[in-house]
Image (cartoon, rainbow, N blue to C red):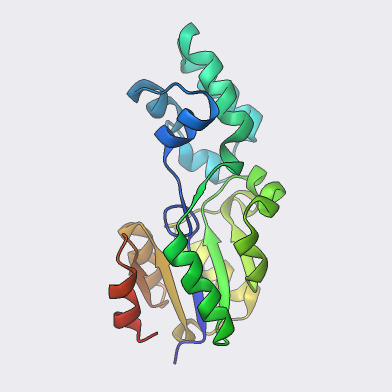
Length: 193
């Protein structure tokens, strides 16, 4: 029986779209800028670098014309993510129906300082971001840490993530999981909620 719904954050609850963020923050984007920003995103999400340290690594890779856009991006990216309204409405319904809500997300340290920018997170029963604990999906250790931290029974959880790799890893450690790719109705039917 499912009692706990575990959500990823980026591209499940909010959209993480580097082009859109660059447009909002600087009005300028190109493929090279996107490649720079994502060049070691796993290391950034794992907490190997602070926001400023990762900014400086990106600046080293940027052309003179790209440097201002990089600075603008790292000044604000963590507070301009667009809501995925259908999922956020469902989260509110799940809470009203008595389900426990948890977040398991790859995100760097700075994100925890800006949770107030995302009011939906206030109704969650537990939040775990990868940066502060230096673990990252899809490595098995973060899933085991998550289950132990919140004292959950794996069989009573369903994990929803936009990346099949992360979903497969959750299943490998015994957590039922499903991929979200703008398919909320299908997910509701599959898990019977």
